Image (cartoon, rainbow, N blue to C red; front, side, top):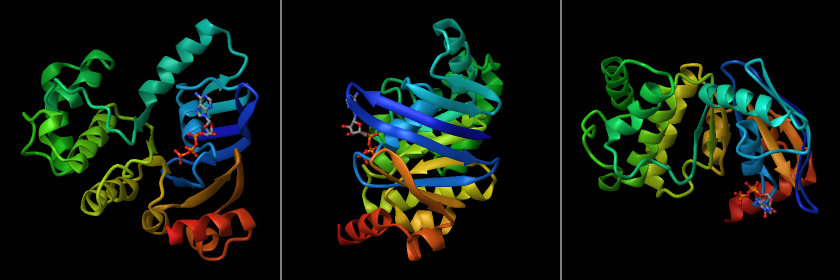
Length: 248
Ligand SMILES: Nc1ncnc2c1ncn2[C@@H]1O[C@H](COP(=O)(O)OP(=O)(O)OP(=O)(O)O)[C@@H](O)[C@H]1O
């Protein structure tokens, strides 16, 4: 579903990603962990074209983005990738003046050109699935952070994405709201949703990830199943990261 090779991203002289290779199969859950500043968010942002990169290739569901694509072709590929790959951010990013229901129907109606009644019926079903069937007419401000994040997940799902990228979806939430959001994400994973999740929630990584990738200074230093990487890390950088995370 997603194949990244040799991805290099620079900000001026700073090499933020120094040659990332990573593959995510259909229905797989990849969890990305690593210290602050190691390039995790930048990596996700390169996958759906929010960031340009200087070298390497990203293939998503058969669509290829590379560093050399001319602007017109790039825009065309990006448009297609963005309809196939959802993104859920730390800060929810909902439309503040729209209702919960409108937040979820906006993309299907205006981007996928779905009929309004069909889009609303599906949005109601998705909002019920994330436990918000009673909140359809609320505005985002009237909801807790955990509820807003679940709206953001329903909004991503409404686009029928082939894959969803999660960028620290629970780091602005308290433990109870974090648990609500991780439970929704766990259900999605069980239903076979392809996902890449950047998170500090190690319990989620242990329970749900098929593969954990450890970033350090713009490189993947270690990858493997969670019980192996998190319980028996081979690399010093992984051990350091895990001991700092446990101490925090
Ligand atoms: N627009 C930018 N201009 C310059 N440097 C940037 C820019 N965006 C990110 N960086 C730098 O790139 C590096 C990687 O940042 P990134 O946000 O990807 O890390 P991260 O692993 O997601 O960190 P965190 O866990 O704190 O979110 C950092 O050193 C950051 O300062």
